[in-house]
Length: 228
Image 1 (tube, one colour):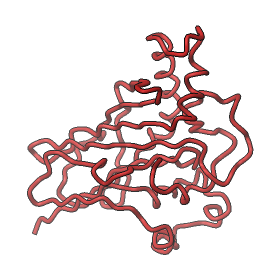
Image 2: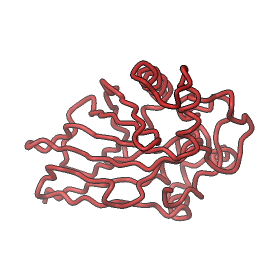
Image 3: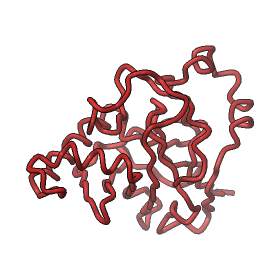
C-alpha cells in the first residue's frame, strides 16, 4: 500500500473522474467520503536525450487488490474469471477515455509553469498476478530542455484515486545532464499549504476536488540544473 494517503481527503462526487476509469461506476458510492477509494503504486522513468531534452515519461501504475477485483468482475463479460484480449482492449480504451480529460494525472512543471503534454499514443492494461497494471508513455508537446528547474509527478485532482511512489527509487531519470541534479520531493502538507497560502481559495479548504491544487501535495521528481 502506498505510503501516505492522509493528504487526499475528498473527491468530486459528480464526475467521479477517476472512478478510476469508470470501470465499475454502478458499484461505487456517490457521496463524498473522507478518503480515496482507489490506491495505486506508481513508477516513473524520465528519459533524456543526449542534447538534454526530455524524450519521454514512462508510467506504470499498479492498483490495489480490491479495485483490481472490481475491474475484473466488470470487464469479464464471459465469466471465466480472466480477461481475454478483447476484454483487455475494452478495459484499456475505457481507462484511456476516462483519464484523458484529466491529462493522465500528470503534473510536469518548468520553473513552476505547467508543461503541455502530448496524448499517449498507446495505453496498455494488464492483469499480472490478478492486479490491474496500467502502462503508458508521454512526451512534452514542445522540446523541454533540462537547463533549469523541472519537476515530474502524478496526482488526481478529484481526490478519488491515490497514486504515489512507495520508494524514491520508483522515480528515476536516465541521461541526466552533468550539470543537473535529481531528487525526489515528498511535500509536507502543512508546509505545502503555508507556501501556497496566497493562491489557495476558500473552495480549496471546503472541497478541494477539481481545484487543481492537490498537486501541491504530490510526490515529484525534481531536476535542478546549474548553468553558472
